[in-house]
Length: 123
Ligand code: SF4
Image: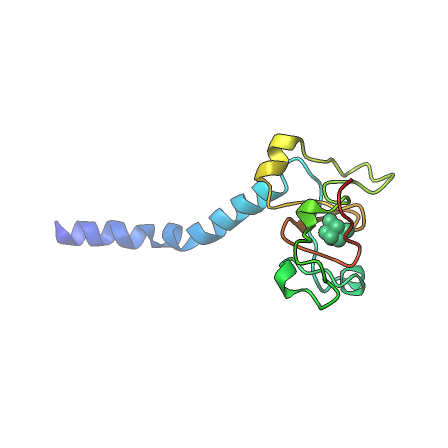
């Protein structure tokens, strides 16, 4: 009996090992649901020039306003003019999303708690 249980556990090991990557894949799908593009890489040339950080708390001293984040930037969830692949999230989806499009970074998603030099308050 014990041996049978051990064999079952051993045969399930590959699935157990794959679970974190499956979960991560699903999270990425959710983050980009309804939008085109992948997460913006901080090492992207334009991202570096704009001092983009996915975690605003790690931004340079240029981020004087400590309440400035992508989620409260007027360019968040806005598509660059002429970008047919970009689709802003509706209000309900935006409230749940960890990332959205940005008017500055075509085809990419920026983190809701991110920041860059182009930050502008809404309104
Ligand atoms: Fe974030 Fe900068 Fe885009 Fe504003 S312009 S949403 S601060 S990356």
